[in-house]
Image (cartoon, rainbow, N blue to C red):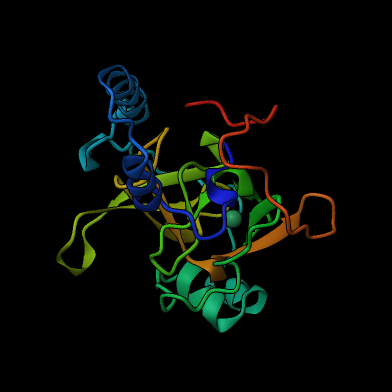
Length: 207
Ligand SMILES: [Zn+2]
């Protein structure tokens, strides 16, 4: 799945460009409709359908130890559930192959394979690197009902999950850049992503 690696692409942009090239003939329209229905066939979950599974962190440090380990900005997000300013994150535009890791404990959280441009100003993924990597809980602060997502190993707050992401999950893991570090796949950041529809051998499963 190369969705997240495409510079400047978005679901809406893809949809409009496809609509413009839709064939005029009946047969062509039928084929086009079939393609469209396959593309839209994934089940978009509701907020209530996002699984709530709060982690039991194995890394337990005192607040003082966390303050020593983290920068003030990291502490505010990871330990106080703060939110960085939109568009400010260093990892927002990272498109290289690699792994996003927890800034609190180093656990692998997200893969570049699942990253996409949500145009929200925060790094966005349609899935975590594994279901075990993150935990979730309902967050009703600020008069909103949101699903909070945190690192399963240290409990560090990462961001929130919204049901407006792309296929195949329909989820958007909206993550604070400051809560993560990035490890390039081969140690050398690369510039060229795979082409849009080309299947890759290690494409993520539709889980
Ligand atoms: Zn962690």
